[in-house]
Amino acid sequence: MLYDASRAIVGIVVGLGVPALILFALRVYVRTRKSAWGIDDWLLTASIPVAIAFAIACIISAANGVGTRLNHSDAVNFTDAAKWFFIAESLYLFSIWLVKLSFGALLYRLASTKRGFAWTLYVTMAVFSIVTLVTICMLLSSCRPISANWDPVPGAKCFSPEILFRMSFANGIVNIVTDWIYALLPIPLLWNVQMNLRTKVSVCILFSMGVFVSVAAMLRVNFTVAYKSTGAPDYTYHVANLAIWAYNEVAIGIAVGSGSTLRPLFNHFGAVGSSSEGSYPLEERSSRRDTWKAGSSIVESQHSKDPMLRRPNENEAHHAASYGACSREMDL
Image (cartoon, rainbow, N blue to C red):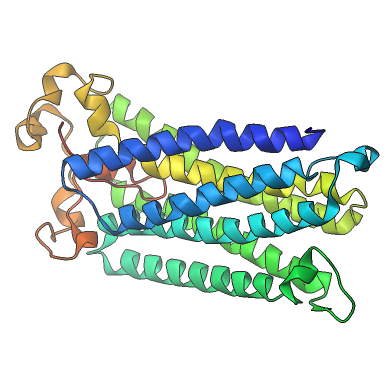
C-alpha cells in the first residue's frame, strides 16, 4: 500500500510519463513519414527505454517505502527502498543526458552555419556530458561493493556524504545552466524575424515549457540542499521530492522536445493555421505568411550529407525558442 508522498511519486510518473510517450510516438510518426529523421531523433529515441526504466524504478521504490513517513515504518522495506532509489538515481542521469543532447542536436540545425553559436553549443554539450558522465561514474563507484549503497556491510568503503552532495549539487547547476543556454541561444538568431500573433503565441508557450524543465532542475537542487541542511531523519519521506522533480525534468523534457516537432500534424487536421494553407507546399505558402528575413542567412546547408546540417525552415525557426527545438516543416 502507498502512503504519504509515495502516492505523489506514482501519480507524477503516470500523469507525466504517459503523455510524454504519446507525444514521442507522434514525433516518430511525423519524422518517419516525411523522412526527416536526424541525430536528435536517435538521441531522444535512445532516451525512451532509459526513461521508462527510470519510471519503473521510481514506482518500485515508492512501493517499497520511498515517500512514506517513518510512522508507517511497517510499510517500509528500507533495503529495497534504498536499492531502487539508487537505481532510479542512476537511470535519471542517463536519461536526462540523452534528452538534453537531443535538444542540443535540434538547436544545432539552426545554428550550424553560425560559428559562434555552433561553438557555444559544442562547449555546452561537452561540459554537460563530461559533468554528467563523471557524476554517473562517481555514483556507481560511491561504495565498494556497490550493494553497500543500500545494504551496508562490514568492511565496505564508501565516499563521504559531503562528496556525494557536492557531486549532486554541481550536476544540478550544470543542468540549469545548460537549460538556459538552450532556451536563450535562439533569441539573437530570431531577433529580426517577423512573426504573426499566432506564431508568437506558440513560441511563448513552447519557450515557457522549456523554462519549466529548468525550474524542475532548480527545485531538485533546492530539495537536495534542504535535505543535506536538515539531516532529514525521516529519510524515506524526504527523498521523495528528489525523485519527483528528477522525473518531472525527464518527462517534461521528452514532451517539449517531441511537441516542438508536431505542428505539421496539427496543420494537417486544421488545429494550427488555416485550412487553406495546410495543403500548399511550403514554397507556395511563402507569400501567404510573414516574411522570415533570417531564413537564408541562418543556414546554407540544406543539401549537406550531415543529417544535423539540414536547413531549418520557418516552422523550425519559430519553435527554436524552446531549447532550440527547430524542426523541419513537413506538410502531411
